[in-house]
Image (cartoon, rainbow, N blue to C red; front, side, top):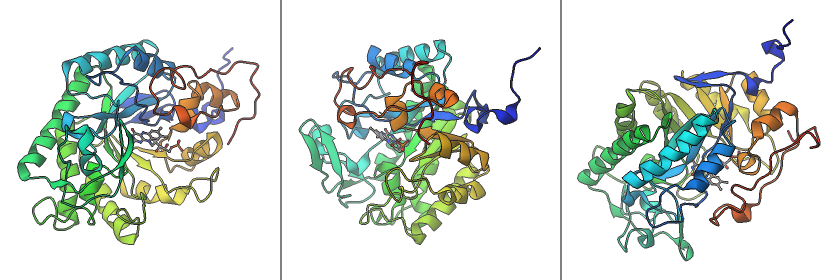
Length: 378
Ligand SMILES: Cc1cc2nc3c(=O)[nH]c(=O)nc-3n(C[C@H](O)[C@H](O)[C@H](O)COP(=O)(O)O)c2cc1C
């Protein structure tokens, strides 16, 4: 007699999914989180990275921390890259461990553009869409520093950057990843180009919303090429709002609508959306903010920001998302899927260890046991 329970009684988050060719046994995705553990001169992922990601192999899909596509992309200390052979070898060890443990893992490709700092670039001024200071902070060896007025990228700079993304995607494939994700969230290079306050260009990469989206579209095409047009996700944050340089007003949202529609016609395996900030800490994510993109994008959608077990199940059940990604919960709960499945309580992480380097707060987070209290946080 079969003891397998009917699918309908399984939590929506625990049902399998197909994300544009990526087959997931569950819909609990590990969101990308920068942890600054590549504390070596070559910015190479180490055994510590293999252990950290291996411990989280139960995720339906792991999206790695943002990873530099080239030396020019660097804008944060001790973040790994994927542009050297040593880095490819380090990542190969990570993917081998994750796969041996039954997981799937895609590499997030990152470039900070004007949000970098000369400290990361051997004293050179960072390059961005236009010579406009994004007024951000860059995490340097001496702590957070104010960004500076960048140099406007030339057409040759842009062509080289697109090529670097393509090369990084090819390296990711050689390193054994299951795909790549284009990091286009927050205040970094791609959102800088999308933003009319920072992109004042009058050439084909500015001058109107279609021009401002061109860099991302070219990057998607370049990154998809070594993957034969499959397995490339894009992560966007249309609601990113600093109230100054980045403003999530109706004009911004209309431009993102057009961008998402255009991405739907390109080789994009999934869209990974960072939602609106929660109205209050511990509040419920605004499902309507994601539903907007469900209507515009025909492919799979991963949603993120402020989800827990209850809200994650609800957003999948409502048909708004195919999968949900969790950042802070996965940092503190390597066995997050088990905890969701068993209704176990979630541990709270220690933000003081997010970027400190070393094992503490990174690979020493305990897994739950049968003695753990049940109920769990929503
Ligand atoms: C320590 C830390 C590092 C992060 N690094 C990245 C990153 O490298 N790439 C990225 O797209 N988002 C990054 N994020 C944003 C998270 O992926 C996520 O959007 C955010 O934490 C909200 O999700 P949550 O409510 O599940 O924590 C980071 C967040 C945290 C807390």
